[in-house]
Amino acid sequence: MRFGPFVLDRQRAELMRGGIAVPLRPKAFTLLSLFAARPSRVLSKEELLDAAWPGVVVTEDSLTQCVHELRTALGDAGPVMLRTVPRRGYRLDAEVIPDPAPSAPDLSAASVPPGSAAPRASGWRERLLGWFGAALTLALMAGLAIFAVLRPPAQPPLGVSARPPLSIIVLPLVNARGESDWFSDALSNDLTFELGQVPGAFVISRDTAFTYKGKVVDPRAAARDLGVRYVVQGSVQRESERVRLRLSMVDGETGALQWSQEFDSDRAGLPASLADTAQQVARSLSVQMYRSTGARAAALSPDQVQADDLAMQGWAVWFRGFTPENLREAGRLFDAAVRRDPGSIRGWGGVAVVNGTGAAINWVPDKAAAMTRLQQASDRLQVLDADDFLTYLARSNIANLNGDNEGRLLIGTAMIERFPSHPQSHFTRAQALANLGRFDECVEPAKRAVRLGPRDYFAGIWNWQIGTCQFMRGDYRQAAQFARAAQQTGPRLPLPPLLLAASLARDGDTNQARRVVADYRARFPDYKTSEIELIMRSRHPAYVEGRTRMIETLRELGMP
Image 1 (cartoon, helix red, strand yellow):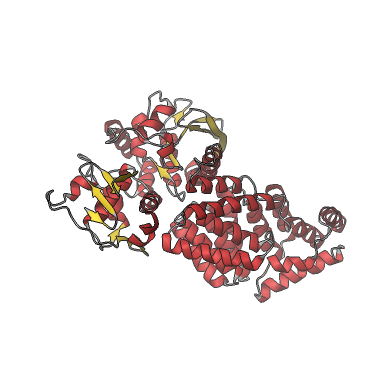
Image 2 (spheres, helix red, strand yellow):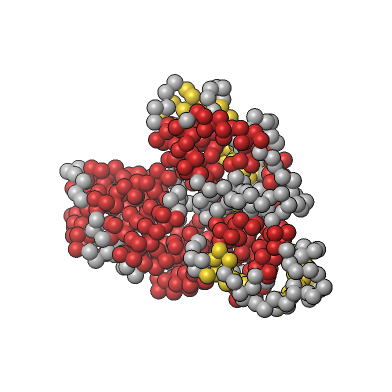
């Protein structure tokens, strides 16, 4: 089939341009075959997922990444030919001329490998509830896992450079004490589900992963067989009334340990804490995947570095820690990524985050220029994929900087519905509620963000938001507690020490408050209370009253 300057040869599984093959991975070729067979028709995301990943549970982010790969392969024509139809799917806008020699296209052969026509699995949350309710269901699920068969790949195994950057398999967790597997199995499943919600992640399904249960597995072999970069493995061990989860993430190419951590839960509260534990672990893993992938890209020579590698380096720097220096360095990498590939969702998302955050806390030299760049990034993301997490985040930053708190509240609510495992979704809603003067409501979503990412690079801002809400409502002791937590998790942030000083003074500890202010002025001699209003911008009367109360208290303590 011919369209534009391209020839799609389905018998040879090649895309040609000017007689030269354009590299495409099998999944991307499958999607392009489906688009070319049905030009000008909107294909739903569900339809595309069923075609490219039959019988496998993946998230829409896998589809987004595949579409991005297609647009990159199509070059300058990519964003024009392959259109995003908001909230519906994608459409190939091109005249397709079939070669008259072959027979009519057989969609099933093009889009679904033989023997793989099973529909995608769904309802994982409902199935999880069943595990906790009946041993019979557990036995059934175990039986299904035993009889599941790994299909051999239709193509040779991908080299590590061709594997999706954020690709991972969670091997079944081992019960270290030989007790019932209900918790380790449920947590393996829940962790797979939560990682599937990470924007841009490619996660192997639970059923496929459980074919490895009870076997000694070389992580490198599992990664090679399934075409992923990272392998998560671990164990669950009960110690008295505590359950300890030990996890590690291994590089699928070298077998090197990339990350390891322990998580503890109360035995009595396991069923209630299972989702929280899985979401917290998933957040830790997602941050580490970005860091590891960025480090891998940074080791390449300049000629080897492509746009997505530059974007991954930017995210690795961003996750390194929340400082002005990291913000500037990440911004340079994101800018370089979008210059090389104007269709890079990961790159434009980074441009939006860096400029939106920098403008919000005055870490950029030209706030107006940062807001213009943020709007540009948001517009590009809207065209590339209106439903991507980074698109929502860009829109949220614009609403925040424009003082549109009602709009930001709607965006935050939508983010929680679509991306419930991402702490930034909950923080977006929390900050909007605070700016609307709804201080009693803003604490819980901000706490939820902290629970999902207690070691997150943004945890300092989330703790500061909780403390600010507590200050506004007059609970100064709690405000001081969260201000201290914000200092520990975000030591370079300008406002947590000032919130701590004001809270201590309002709670009656004036001497300690003065010491905090004196220390702050020694470190930041040029900082003035007038700058607080540039960050805490809400004009809601209740918010203005609380901010004024804070500033007046700080001036009484000696802040200029």
